[in-house]
Image (cartoon, rainbow, N blue to C red; front, side, top):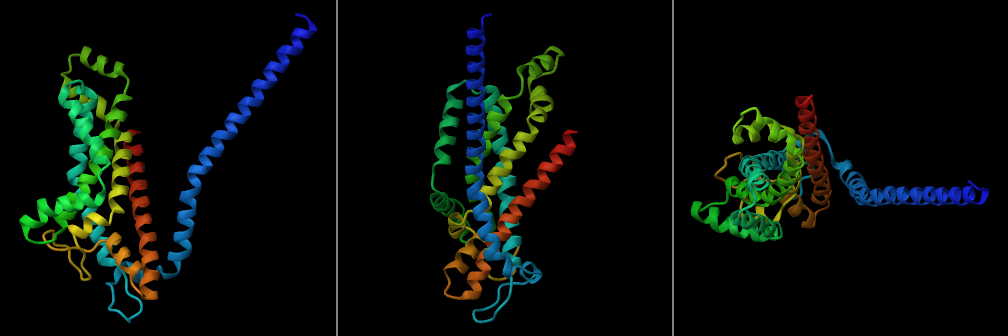
Length: 287
């Protein structure tokens, strides 16, 4: 090979290396841009909410206007109850629908399910709250934790269904073929091969839905309503962190405003902690 050809080849390799570095740098920059808003939000919450964070915030009930201190123990427990009820309703239905769409989703009915799921994901949360008010609150003649759980479960369904469908599709087809070749029926292949292989993704999808439901305020205003006292009855109004943060943030009292920032910080901590525990559990089970 001539010297000129060698120089051209070296120049071509050099340009490729430069473009490779530029593209990699662009990927890192895009990742940083995605992480930056979350870092700013967390930093702002820590700065505003940390000064009022104390042990009493987790164990005390809200105090009347004019009395400093108090906490949001009832709202923390109420949020866990509401999100737990919503997960009990939405996770089995959402995972089942997602598996159905992935494994049997070639009919007109499956197309209708996909269209309905996509349509439901775009419905404003306040509309879901009004619908839950008509479907649950009015027949029960009372605001309740059950109504709040139903409203949050409706909001969770689209995320769980569509994410589960995509995750299950990523399971290699060879897994299914090998199990079927051994004589396993289709339902057992799905139960013992497909779902365990997609377990981590399904848990992640469920956690995304929980994170969305935990921070919703508008549906709870029409369903769970709120309660400044200690109440864990499922058929009665119940306190929740999003509603209490909303009420405290718009109140003309400095102490309530400080507690609103702390409540928002605790809400983020709760969602992060639940997600971390479940992900670690799934990893240990998988190992």
